[in-house]
Image (cartoon, rainbow, N blue to C red):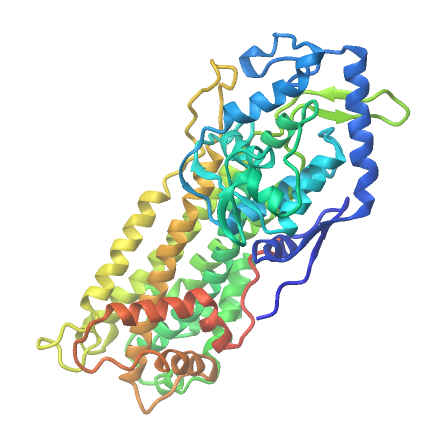
Length: 518
């Protein structure tokens, strides 16, 4: 597979597709057009310091200590102390692609010039991205307000030569890794430690990673849902565009259209257009456009929120200047992660429901009274248990996701001696999504196995061309289940087809774009 095209961060910002490319490993560079804003912001900050104006976190202490003045001779030491004292994260390191995305998000924010940092600081982040030098960032320790302080402090500490870096040569002490690649540890100027620490880049990186995966899995769930509908000889009438037009949610219309496309030309469907005594299918089949369409709507709303967050400046204080006026440092709360926390909670609900609907389809398939297929999808039930426990496994994963879907954004534990008295918990809200998505991959892998097994019982009737390509792709890895066998490898193989995008590629039909804000 070829590497993604390089991404250039410029004053106009970039779209979610470009952030996804960075997450996938695309090279990142800064547009020369950003140079003027960076230099102007740094000059403005120097001017305020020269005037002796009190600027939070520049010549004052931090948080509850904001009223403590700092002598000019101690400004650099103040910033270094800030970084080292705040590098108090715990837990396993964040995945390398997440850290890479976090660095790029910080680079884009600083390049706007409102943080007042020097070009040298921005250049070091660029160089670390270019040399694939990723700070070791513990996952836990951020409450999502005043920025993702602990995770970003670990990022900044590595820039100072403290802590560790993940490098192409392996895990190394940060100072040695920088020097090995011809880079010098950073000496912080006024406000630069604060600018690196203040921000939502850790929460945003995790939320973006989850959004990218969730959009892919929604498409995969439409495919496995269509296969289950075929296996149960369900009706495609609920996907009729005339029904969708009477309740025209955009996501509902698109998901119904996708299901129609997936099932178009199915001989299985054609075989029971007449003479079938079932008036209506259960909700797990019939209401797919409504449930999946609602999930698609949530993901698109989240896409809009995260597009703004990724392109914004979440430092504090920020340097602004009206035309012809003296620059000012405005203290505010752009570091607060509430938008991300709400978006992550909404995503958790959508992820949970996509899996819950799939599990209900599996429960229907193994029940002969509902599916009219052999019990537990085995030719010899009784002697064989077939897919009995595969459905139980899916149920267990759905239960885990339900527990994880409890909202994080409604919690707040005041910090910093009550100066930071309302926090968002955006880091946890976003970080818990990837384990939920791992569960969803496994759930959809289970459904893929069971739906294809159900369709096998309907031979010689075939499904649509699109769904038969998916079945062929699975059968190249997993044979039909004739007698009980060790099933864990089958589930793993099917889940990998889902995770890798092979299921969507095999179907070969357009799937809804969750990154669209439309």
